[in-house]
Length: 484
Image 1 (cartoon, rainbow, N blue to C red):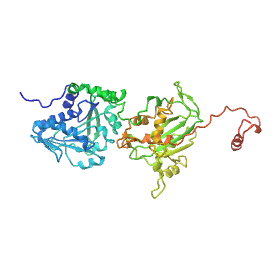
Image 2: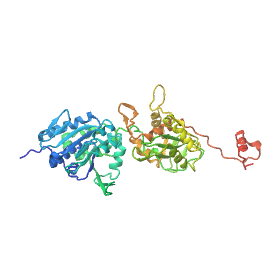
Image 3: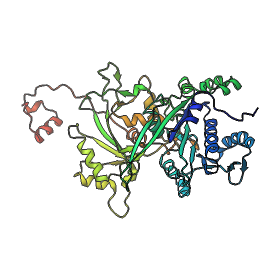
Image 4: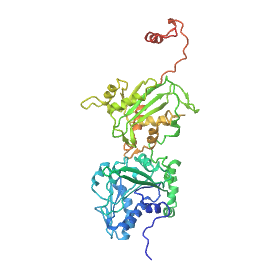
């Protein structure tokens, strides 16, 4: 009787091996057997296409490959495959080849242009903040021998690439197993080219072998984090983020749009981006406690983000608009707004590189309707100074109620801020590899020392010029009042 070296477990692993779809995202929770699933998919592919099968296994960092390589040795060496340590690659008896590589920088993907692979495996794809290097690698999927090519990826919620991975694989079909189709036009033949992708969810409960071999693993997870975090680990809940920097974000911060008093201070904040998204926010400062139509109280001095404009065509990809066009877009969105009292922006727009700065160009393009002051750009606290991230966290937590809110229409802030991660090398700071543009702009707003304006007293009839205060008299001289 032949020895069985490896076989897929019933459920998601079996579905992965049998899946004919070109692009598969597999996993979404801890302990779902993701690495073994990738190994099994390669074995199936290599045994079918033999010397014409060429694969590459990718991780973000070299050290992250260690565990996968050790697992591959447990399986492949028993099948007669030869491991070449210097080249980090396997050669199988039938000629199939599998490489293990890492992409520490997005630019490293350029080194593989011109290569040809029939299978690509990207483990923990959410570690990649941008899909560009992954897309470049997909260009290497080709075969002169007619072998069907395929792309396989694994990942969990969280990480700098959480947003784009969630948008591509999870949001179209959160429960998985629904094939999504993209269509492209061949520029030479004008034929329609279709590419299919699918999400195959795999959870710890699907990994019967691990549950049997390590029954205490679930208990270990429950001791490692909050109830919400454990839910993300066990169930693959993409709305709960592992390692979130703003773990103080809550649903309380998101409120339904409503009319806000016109006498409140209004201001803008702005973070510039071209290849990356830009972010513009419009804010009001509560001059007094305000009862929202839904029945709760927004405290005096709280910030309310009542509008945003986020310049992206897809997660973390900018519109490449000129600053003049952005300035005109800002003006067009303010046609019925109360007066903007001040504006703060990314200090980078004030740089002068042989010509007018971006701030000057925006002012000129709008006849000074869009003018900016330099934002306080401090990120973290130090030497007795308050950092911007601390300001944001303090406002999110508040004392009795949060001191910062955003309308539910500010969808890109709601999408990006809760999933941002800690910088691994500087935990008190944010990982700038993530989609942090709205967060930067929120930080500028919090650091702008927003002030409240006094609530206007109810006007009383003025019977003579002697009843006016000096301020009222000045207003009357500038613009006669029909109350006299």
